[in-house]
Length: 309
Image (cartoon, rainbow, N blue to C red; front, side):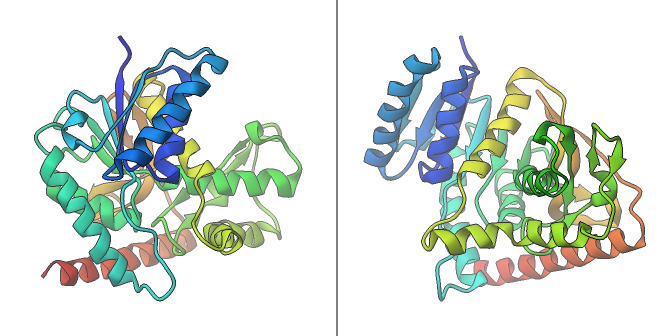
């Protein structure tokens, strides 16, 4: 019997994540969405791809959130994307309302699950879920840093003309334009060197702006190939108990001098969720950037509180 992964939200990221998980054969998958026909269509489409890839994973679809019961992992992608004319507070209000409804229906079923937040604004929604579901911080965290680090690694590989497999990159901080790519903690393995040099700032800026660049090119919608790959990688680490070093949005309790907020920090993920939070010895510039990112998260948390009044 395969492990069970439930994905709440059958949009582009949720649907593609379900496809990657089911096609891999590592788990059975339940795709849940209020739009039952959308979820069903993606279920059938993914089912038809499994024989080609010789996967025996089962994929089901439903609009019933109670189907998360007995899930090893629950991935929450549900929510609205920010649209033109929509303020950050509008988005916070809309998505906190969506997640509050979801939490009310799944809270009794996910106590033994690992919950991965994907809904944006990522760090704020992770904090909101933490407060609503009252789970251990090691078993509820946000997937943002894995995606940001992948984008950083991709741009490094292209700039230095090396294979992707040779690049180990790290981004911490909020999953927004205050993120903090860390060249000093990012390496080209084949050359055994940190990412240094005159072009580093160009790569950092390109990483920070990558998501917005993709949104502008799409015209409508946002990235989903890379986000779903990042979801899959985190789920795989949990299901297979592979020690995966990455960056995730975690509720901090004194680490990096921060308390009572969620923000991206280096972690080890395995079958228990987050098995370790890694505290890096940041230099002055890195620390200043990270603290600025934390301040931006705090401002958004205050905006969230206003939305919930």
